[in-house]
Image (cartoon, rainbow, N blue to C red):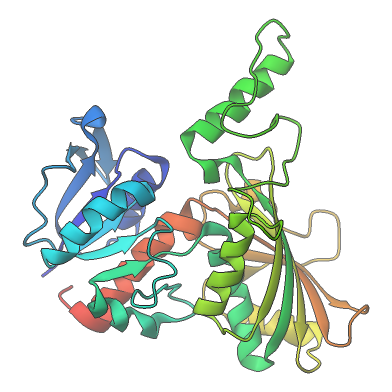
Length: 340
């Protein structure tokens, strides 16, 4: 016996990936509904070898459905998630709306799968920010061996993190550079993204950090350990898919780089590719379309007493969003609902 599953926001980048991954991982689905806004009503989307027509999110009745994967943004989630939850459907939400709600679990299944049980507070589980998700998968196994004191992370985030409009802007601007008569001024981003990098994701806060940077701090504390200090600089780069992160970790005690490498090799969700030679590391091009979070460039940091540096790359549409949501659904099914 399987589940009745809803994907809300099925025509967007993340929603389409959710449908793909549900099919790829053979999630036990008895019935599936693809929902979208009225302007996308009737649009066809793929689910394995099936073609689904989108239904109207505004009028959909969630009663009798088991799990809803939401990829519709915070504003719409504020309206529809409580309706779905009240109807008895467990919502797994990809927006930022519920991530910091103390009554809603924020889950990365490789890190804190036990927290899915807390869904009963509101019938909602939150999916973390894309940049946080891949980082905590790498931090958790190391933290279990030697407690982490501080993390300094710089991100290199692809334009797909800003949705289809972000991808279109990179494409159009890149073409316009070779055709000067075709002016493509910044619209989605604050400055030109083609052949450039922008140290600004989300809005600025009073302390000079951005909301994206704050998210990494707050979410790491909620998912892994509230005692870990995190400072982040988040940068948008001209890459279509795949986020990269340079992570500096300071531990309470010494951890040898070879032991760290062995720990990461054995950890769930990670793939270590770390050869000290030309091309002996992973870049976003190789990570795109893959389930794994890739770790490279593991090395001791001699500037602090107990430091290690590493390079972390993942497909942000997958582990950073759709894959993690499906993994939450799998964890919920295995640990709580147990219908499949």
